[in-house]
Image (tube, rainbow over all chains, first blue to last red; front, side, top):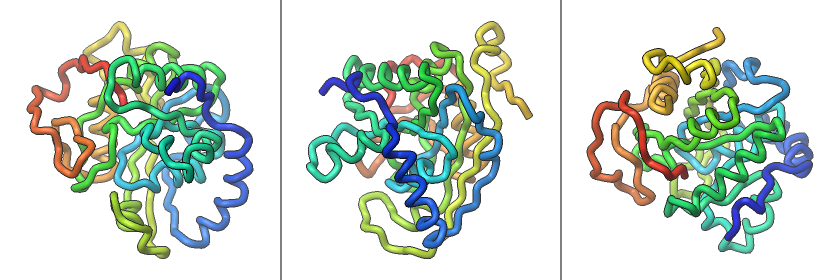
Length: 200
Length: 46
């Protein structure tokens, strides 16, 4: 697999968003906090917790711009997802790490350099027990390299709709996404003691 | 920086934080780590 061949979200995502968002808003209650802080143009990384398969789908639906996500390369093994997911903005990542995962980050860098949004789950996988795990550093390194902001995103409720490894079971639960002010990696390069720079 | 991101996510979601990497399976990696504020050196991002 050559992940750098994947360019992220296409117009298909924008079209899908127009169709799916109103349907999703009828099916679920979304509480979006802070999404107005997202830049309307230019690159940015959204770092979210990961508690359900729906996290990326719901974020994709609710953000106002195209967003590309990394997704596990196992999705490329199934005919059901092999073509659809990359067309919707998934960049497959080989989670064995090393150079294989670097290919996906190179694709993500291309997404950011085109001035688009990139979403990533720093934990690397869905949390099966609801706890938040240590984040891996790819997003931070990418932000430093491209000099773009990181927006932490807190997602709640999606695990109740679809727990990891379970079928979609509830169509009425609500979920919430909270998006925090951006972190400014460029301002942190020379000040390692100030690890957070927010534009509040 | 990523630790700060995780702590902000924790404050937003109320999730309990575990200072270990998540595993792909059902149980977390037993690999203990030092302070979350220390620098990360892992090269993989999944």
